[in-house]
Image 1 (cartoon, one colour):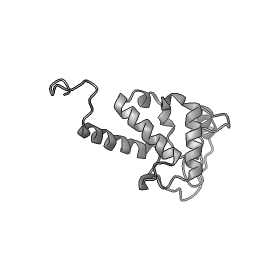
Image 2 (cartoon, rainbow, N blue to C red):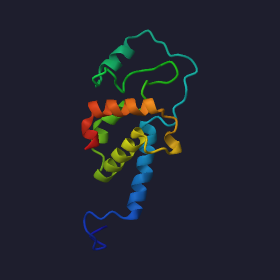
Image 3 (cartoon, rainbow, N blue to C red):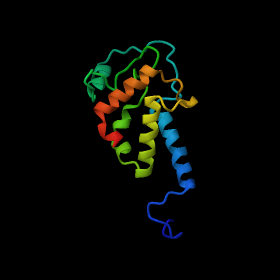
Image 4 (tube, rainbow, N blue to C red):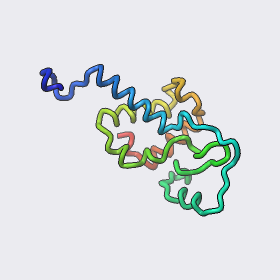
Length: 141
């Protein structure tokens, strides 16, 4: 489109920015479990799945992982999907990845105080930020 309109190759229109923001905001809501339901009762099982799943990691220097279960009031202890460490996130288009990274950092650092993420406590935001900084440092590059 930039070629057709005789624009620089790196030009990003306002329309493109709005589309990227719209899609990425939805992705961030999913990654940060914005619509997660509260468990009505603790989840218990008889298999070794819980231990095996959590052991996969990666873990930060405090032994925390986005794979850590809560299973009392919510599914995961830290409300951020472990899938953020997947190749799908690594291979997002450059513009989408940049917006995701910037907005995620703003949300976790507390500078984004939008209603969509008000459910995240300061301690949850800090823990997720610390876990991601240690276990996926390339996310912030």
